[in-house]
Image (cartoon, rainbow, N blue to C red):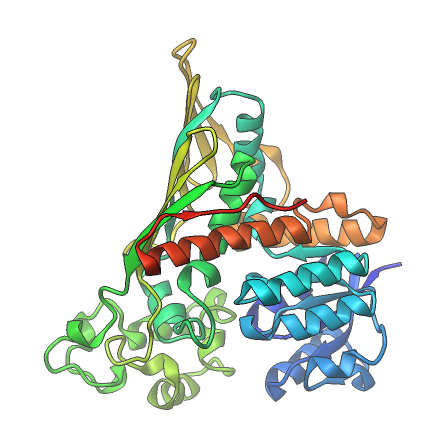
Length: 418
């Protein structure tokens, strides 16, 4: 029998996971909860959901268990309520990252998953790519000896920063969360996964240095449609979204966040009146546009993570340096240098098979969805790579790094609980 799913939050991420689940042939969506009427009706029609199981918010699903599992993909600050209550009802949970904006709420979610014995898979999709399997396998096999240091880069992309973190839903810490949590908790979780360890001490630096009024070009208007300097601006909403309109592959994202109708009149109206048409120097954003996290481990190893808006939007780049070898990866291939022999080889993760690296998050969206369905089918939480407590521990690395950035101090982390 297919795994039955309740979709709680039918936005871009919720739709992505639901579509991947249904496409496998191993799942069907039987309930939807979504406040936006267009998205609610579209999701219900797409998945053939009985009108009796279509709700304006998650409380409509909380009267009893309607499905085997729930995809919880509401806005970040609205995760705790549905996740805790649905766990209590016995739903297994596929929970979009971050778990919650605070340690208190994330702890409540983790505690509920443990207390009620449900499978909780936080959507740290980078864990589930063929590339990650390759890198972690090489580290675990001892191919570089003992890990001494690493560098990891998340190239957010100049236009992606403007879209999601200047104009979009994740632009403010008070309404969503700090950039390190909403965007880069992927990466700090990935580093814990690949290295097999949690840092002992953390320092961090960064800030909002460009997308602010002080950098506004002379003569710039409040909206790109009216702006005389728009043609020369790298962050032009007009250029970005009309290019997306001309490319059907971009209609779901990023265009779907801007307008529900992929047409020139609808897009023009959205840019004229909505948040995505604003000048990037005249928004109410406050999240950082660059940040560096420096980590020290109990055995003396060190590592750095860098997040920057001022890049192309590409796969992450990682260098892992050990006593016996060196790894350098670009999101698909890994260069390995063996110090004992001097030999060098380049390994391609595509040879491992599985979801295509051209898919969402390098195939991670598909890989996570398939692993979650397998875990629910088998009743075996070991088929996902992290449980509730482990996911909470990697979130605590993020919160510690953000405390370090704000305070200017080195933060010592408590040992993760079992």
